[in-house]
Length: 79
Image 1 (cartoon, rainbow, N blue to C red):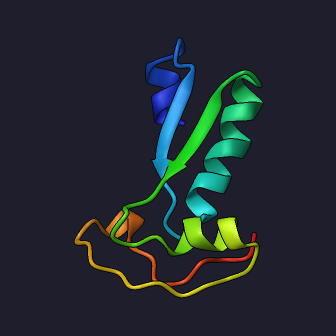
Image 2: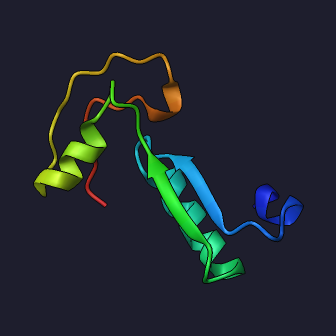
């Protein structure tokens, strides 16, 4: 919300995926402020569980080798 208040012209948000709840909430808020805002979730190649789970259509476990806590997930999540 602070980003949208401080930068009302923002068109894209790029956020860490993590467990998904933060980026899900950000999508709800961003779309409520401006439906044209695009929201992208990113994840470290060194902790790909979320991406792999999405790609395979099921929750998977993956090795995690990153210090970047916001994107460090060993398991994908069901959303």
